[in-house]
Image 1 (spheres, helix red, strand yellow):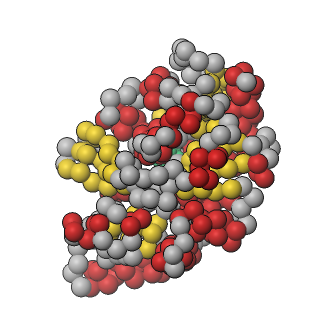
Image 2 (tube, rainbow, N blue to C red):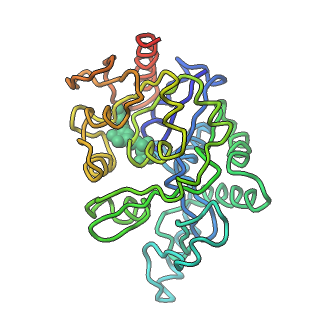
Length: 330
Ligand code: GDP
C-alpha cells in the first residue's frame, strides 16, 4: 500500500506512470482542497479534479487542468452577458457576511459566477454541479469524491484531505486574496507576505486520510506551500508523517523551479526557493528524489534520476526512483 499527497500538477504528472511501479489497487491519493472555491454556487476542487480527470483518461495534459477538448459555451455566455450588462469581470467575492453562510465547505472562498474568473469548461461544470448537488443532498466531500471517482472509472482511491473548509489565503503587498485570485487572476504578480490556511485550526483529518497515512507516503513534486501546506496545517497530519516512511520528489533542480508559483510562495513565507528549502519544509521526509543535475547536499538519503516528467515513461522512471528511495529507508 502507498499514499501520494497531491496538488494539481506535479503529483498527477507522477501518477501518469506510477502504475508500473505501484499497484493502482493499493494506491491512495490524498488531494489538497485548500485551492477549492465556490463559484456561482458550485464547489470547484481543482486538485481533486485533476486526479479525477487523469484517472478517467480525459485530463487536458497540455494545461494539467480541465477536460481535454472541452467546450466553453456556458463560460463564453457568462462573459457575454456580463459585458452586455456592464458588470465588471474579475474575482467577485460574495459579501463578507456571506462568506460564512451557505455551504459550510465553501467558507471564505465564495465567489459570484458573474463573468467567472476561472474558466470552467462545459463538461467540467457538470462535475461541479454533480459534486455540489450531492453535497447539498447531505453527503460528505469524501463520499462525493468516491462517487465521482467511480463515475470516472478510477483504479486508485482518491480522498480529499478533509471534509471541512480550509481556504488558502495569500497575504500580499496588495492585500489579502484567495489563492485562486492570486494565481489564476493575478498570475502570481503581487508580492507574497504570508500564507494563511483559514479554517485549518478547526478542520479535521478524515478517518480515511488517517488510515491512508499509516502507509508509506510519497510527496510528488508539489508546491510545498499551497499544495502540501494546507495538509500540514491540519491538526495531527504532520505527526502522522513522522510515523511512516516518507519520500519526497523535489519540484526544483537546485534553485530552478519546473513551473508555477512555488518559488515566490516559498520566498514569501521565508524558505529558500530551492531543493534545500523543500527539505527544510519537509522535516518529516526520510528520503528525497532529486534531479541528476541537482547537487544540493541534503542531510537525508537521496536517489537521483532525470526528474523532468513529460509523459508516462518519465513518470515511471521517477516512480522507480521513489521505490528505490523507500528501499534506502526501510
Ligand atoms: P499546483 O497544484 O498546480 O500548484 O501544483 P503542484 O503542487 O501539484 O505542483 C507544482 C510543482 O510541480 C511546481 O512547483 C513544479 O516545479 C513542479 N513540477 C511541474 N512539472 C514537473 C516535472 O516535470 N518534474 C518535477 N520534478 N517537478 C515538476
